[in-house]
Image: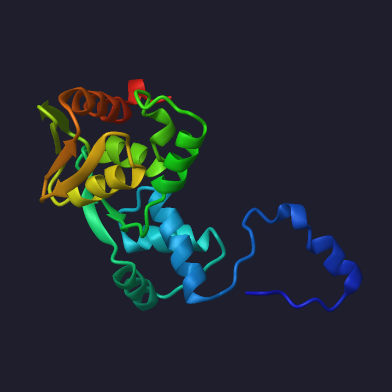
Length: 201
């Protein structure tokens, strides 16, 4: 609720801008959807109750019915991570890796170094979903928990890794097509490093 100011002197004491930890946002569905995407992209949310708490912590109040509709509209689904936890995830529109890839090329990045092309989304889903990575020739096969392959494939596609032609996702398997066996091996090594806590900085 918004507190109405009646005493200028008292309100000056209460309204301390530095005390506001959450930026102001319009109370619209679009703003709420954007916040839900942000929360699900950075936190492991296992239930609608946890999501409502996270929204409340950002000064957004919503009913259970409204939140359920939001999740349907955002096409949010529950996926199983490698440690067995079921968490909410939403597909991301567009290809955020395009800007990163374009910047890497403009800066003369070495295509053998995949770090400049790695998006936070790819790093997160490798850490949460990648089980194994094996290659034969220019084809790389990634294994994930059930019903999670499309999320990982989308993250690989969006990152636009050099030498990767595209991905085909099933239920728990991603087929990554690359230009050569050398590239397939390089991509597999990189993705496995992202999945390994000891290999992530």
